[in-house]
Image (cartoon, rainbow, N blue to C red):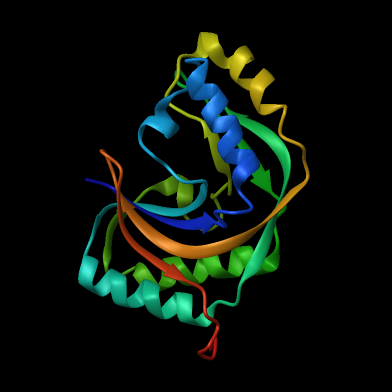
Length: 182
C-alpha cells in the first residue's frame, strides 16, 4: 500500500475548503474526498513503501524543527486525465520548497519507490478539491470550486503520514519549531 506524507491545513481555517468538498459530495459530482474522510492537505511525497518506525522518527524530528507558517492558495487548477483533479495551488515560497527538499532527503533511506511527480523539481504543490470523478463532470466540479474566494491564506498545522487505499492516517505531528533547523 502506498504512503503519503502531507501538510495538514489548520482545521479551523480550512472550513472554506471543506465546504466546497462537502458540496461536491452532496451533488454527487466528486464524493470521494468526503467519503474517505480526507482532511484538506498538501501532499509532499508518496512512496510505495515506508519503513514506518524510521519514518515516524524522522518526520517527528522534522516537525520539531518547523515553525508554523501559512500557505496562500492563489489559483484554481486542473490536472487533466481520464479522472481529472481540481485543486487550489499555493504561491510557491522558498520555505515551502526547502521543507519539501529536506523531507525527501530525510526519507531517502526509509522510503521505497518515491512517486516521480512528487520529487523535488517535478512537484506541483496543491490541495485537491475534487478527485476520482469522471471527466464529464469536470465543468460542474469547476463551477463549484470557483466559489472558493482566492487568494486564501491558511496556516499549515502539522506534518502527517497517511496510508492508502483505504485512507488511514498513521501519524500527525504539530510544528513546534523548538529544535535548530540545521
